[in-house]
Image (cartoon, rainbow, N blue to C red):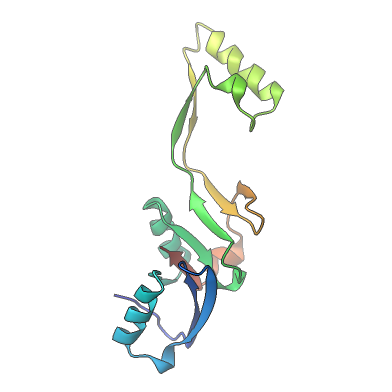
Length: 149
């Protein structure tokens, strides 16, 4: 079931054709709007950041409607364990970071043999650039978060 509150219009991201479509909610009944969104292969909920966080924890994508572009979204990185043998080959770590990790791997008192990634949220920009994401106060208070299928 969709909950739209006092929203008069929303952008629907058409995952089939990779384009945005403006839907005037007042032109649709609840059932017709659901069918239209399903036709576009997109199920969306609009609301607070809480909706987005819940979706991210479920492995879904989220974005703010005000961001405009269908290409910009946030996701939660899947927790991962990177074994010590992989560290020297990683392109995402600078040489000094690799050296520090390797020191902990070689230290018998540390008994650490991997890097543990968890609890990271990333934002994907227009050119597929991926960066760490920490919501601004505006993002936290916004009511235009949508969940992408």
